Image 1: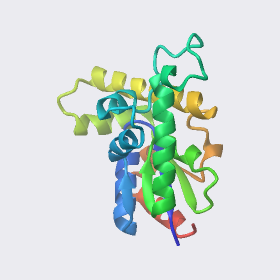
Image 2 (image 1 turned 45 degrees about the horizontal axis):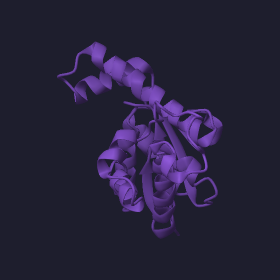
Image 3 (image 1 turned 30 degrees about the vertical axis):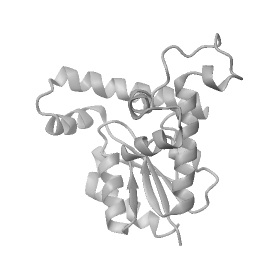
Image 4 (image 1 turned 135 degrees about the horizontal axis):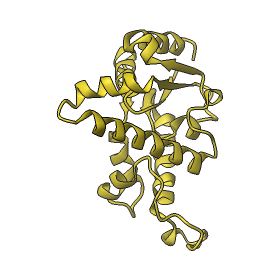
Length: 196
């Protein structure tokens, strides 16, 4: 039976690593940043550079001055959102997989064979973890980047789904990696995946 696992995450909490390791353990496909390129292909009007620019962000110039009925004049974020929705649904229809980010939990909300996971962690734990991954960045820069990424993901989620970012009721499983650690969190995802 097909298995779809979506992993939403706070920046630096380890959701990407958990997603990759989950896919490896289950022998299924993994989609993270490579999904961006698939999305660009799904939308003829967007270049890969444009897709990367707006990935999980709401355009700063979004407003009601633009016609909501004219596709070509809508903010790029709307075009990108529709392209991502199409790409994610096509992937989930086609194969078992793990999809990290991109509000895939919301996009695939009607899929019965889908496990929706949210990975979070204490702020200082995330900052410490990222300091090992980005040793050249100053602590101040790392903290600013974490706050910026969290804010962008929150705005993106709220804007395109109407949901509150990180709301546990949107997920089947929420994991705090600063309490559990990456390995124990991975184990919980794999155990939960047995039941979908």
